[in-house]
Length: 169
Length: 169
Image (cartoon, rainbow over all chains, first blue to last red):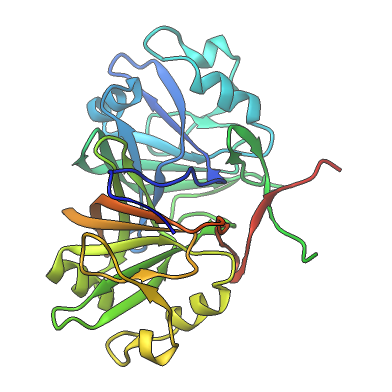
């Protein structure tokens, strides 16, 4: 057993799912960032949580507008994850810069991400402090799934692939 | 696009990682439940979050004692996930009933789960309300990884397997 009393998470844990967090700033500019730290957090009502660092542009967007779209990254979005994860909405409009295709939402005022495995429109119900991140808890007010279905993308130590069950050897 | 304004999460999303949440009740009886709804939520200090339904025995344990172990389920623990997920610590001592092997923690008073991919000892820093679940935020005060490493288990629609990147076809 390799133990540590230093505060750490142990070795990196792969694979990790990839969430595309879509939002708008107070002036209406849309933005999207990839995140790994998100989860379901209530069944009824349906809530999703995502942890966003206080320094992120997305933090300011969700904090100011109270809305976001929780999109599970889809199979064809590996390049988009890299592009949107290595730039900041402070400097550019990622939707314009990377020609990101989007669709109209039905409830909130945040675009849906074409090509995602799922788009969950969320209205902020709680913003909780959590160390160097905020936990945003959103109520799912509308959900959209592509037909035919698109599989989710996972982060295998910075390679973005679909995760399948290992075949018995 | 298959859209819904009814509050739902869309189709089930597989695979989902599996967290074994270990705790003790106020009388000291140890317990463990599998959960899928957990995430990292701070880098510095290192925090982990897990969502636990208010009706769960584990809810009462963490609420009362302020401690838990966040263990990533390991490759050989599929049966243990089934066993501990279909029973309640209200009725039995799962560690005795299922002969669960454990090790001594170094900081908190909650046993470590042998065979897990990682054991993170957590001290509760926040309990947040989130619909029908509480979000417990714990600071990682010690971490333990087995040598040789054990891979994480994922939930593929109730079949528990290791998740690997899909080979290009």
